[in-house]
Image (cartoon, rainbow over all chains, first blue to last red; front, side, top):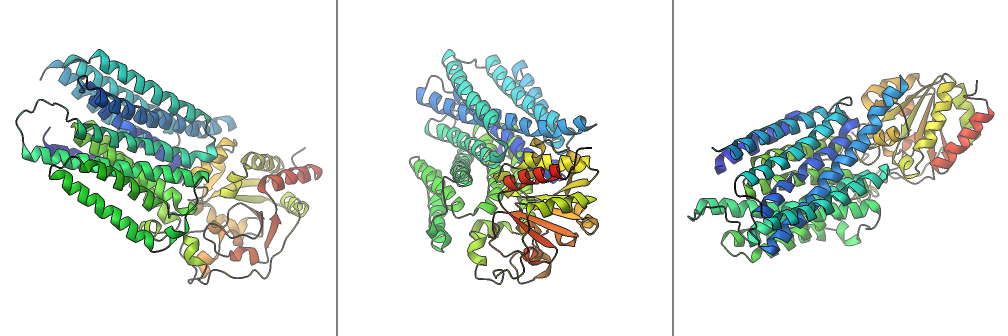
Length: 97
Length: 479
């Protein structure tokens, strides 16, 4: 991938993000924050890449593994906690009717 | 292009599409939960895509598998346990902690690549390429470190483990932070010049900068900081994407970065604070004590729980204004009991939610949802404000600044211009409060002095429990 096209990816990704979440009701801000936060744990892919390309370099394997642990802590925890919050919202209306 | 490359390309594209749909879906109550699962699925898909690509091309060594499994199990396990066990009231600090760990992950990736350059098959040295590499490593480390230490400080402050040291409220902190920032810049240029050891300087000073920037910020502004740090963790992820050459990381990171920025803006607007004043102004109470906002109360009416119950019984329409005090007292379930009784008596009950009620936008909605309050009864500020004149009783529970009429009437008040709930328009206002202490802003609340406002002093949970008893005695809710 050339640097320039990566920059394009960055720019378009940012614009996409701005467009997607421009109209969220305040009710959902906390879950959205937590969900977006879980997505930021996508660095787990970078950690995986590091481990795969370490070629037996133990310190690098350890750094990659710790990094992967931190990222997955963010991802798994983030999605679970978001789900817990949203479960409360979605259950209510159906209960009432 | 061989098969593994094509497969990875397709999976990445699909993952980006699903992540975008996920974020989009999170913006609607109906689809939010499915959207969250969709995003989680997209993330797992991206892992499968990456692993299958390496399996199909270079292969993955047994040793690598071992470390992948160790890291995955430990991280996922702790994350899942914490997510299941944490109480809903501690949501802001939990998000802060998760967020900090995301930042740490990006930092470690960049650090790993910087110390042990991974062989990517590019034997011929390319100056431009190595420059880009060093810049993205530096950005990843810088933003990652700030995200990590900043989030940890934010979490510690919200948990009450850390107070605001006195010196951080003086001008000294600007000087200190500027020193850290300049030192980071020096380390950055030194790194580009080929001095690899300065990477440690960058790690240290950007970590200190994260602490120095977050430490002076007061409790009320903390949500803004967490949201901003959330945005940073996205930027850190995008920077890590440049480091390892992954478009997927860049797109996802950029989306999260943009999301955090929007949220931060919304929160600032709700509190009538600019981002600049949150970050550099110190805590609000420090400035406002000297201003016109302070003053003595002259016309406080205090009343008993019994009177409150009698008034509630006679009402047709009741609006509840919950604030963070309610959450601290863990009284949302008791409140729900009270409102259930009123509803059974045919009284219309609505909850007025200020955009920054609780500690994060939407935090109060989550807390009330936990207590089984129907979603339809939660009304946003703009929707509910015209209803106050036609309301018999307003119950203010642990909210303060968000119902201060000063924000509308007194142009010299520091709160002036902040959108507030017009509770004083209602016939009767009951404020349930522990004592006469000021809100987060440290500003006197003119509402308490108004003739139609009565104070019910006591802990929110205890008052509500007493209220249930009184309502029972009156036969409310038992037909």
